[in-house]
Image (cartoon, rainbow, N blue to C red; front, side, top):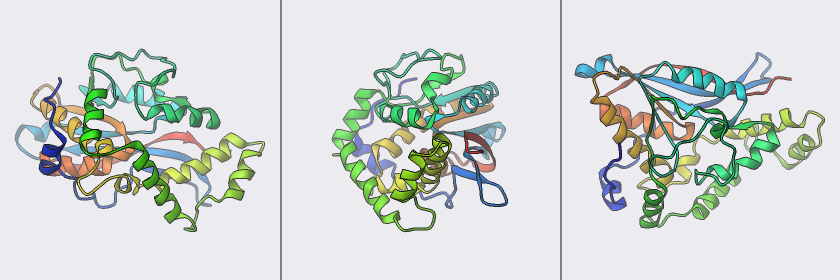
Length: 285
């Protein structure tokens, strides 16, 4: 299922970031009537084909948070059984097999290593440890490490530049309603209920970071979001040619989906028909 390597200069001129998809949300906090947080949730966006044989095809965008509750990943493993094929993200050489229960050592994903500390602090588990990547309907829809690095180099991108852009976004958000401050962070760290309170604070940050992929990108998008999306959609195009595929899932980080949903509408003429939400983090007392 490998696709030809497209040079970054070709990609940026051919496929730029899509228009934002009507300010959709793909991560949210579920709250009760008193505004008390109950759960951090991720979306499953259901999209239906509108042209020719694709009218019978449904493509679901299955949002992921890479650290979460065990029950969350168990629910996802059940959900994946409903699809003819599931396209998934993982920066790894083609043919890499992740056995279920894989423990985080040297990370196969260039960004997931930084999530290990977060996992321990919040009492969560990692996606690579819980998702069963060995099932027959899983299809790798991602760049190889070499391809990923080449695109970043060609576009003069680096994780350090993106990091400082994200810091700028965080500074710009300071003082807005609901933002975490240093005192509340210290109180949470020394609370008897530290894990839940830290999760609630971090969940709030996740909910407010909808604009972060845009901040991390230049005018022609970024490798980490937009070019990875293009790679996934090239493989989606291959799968749509298989007439036996009536229901296709795309299992990617939820931060990819504002751009990806808009591109699926533009490129394949699919339309959103519904959504459902899964609890990723339990925030109840």
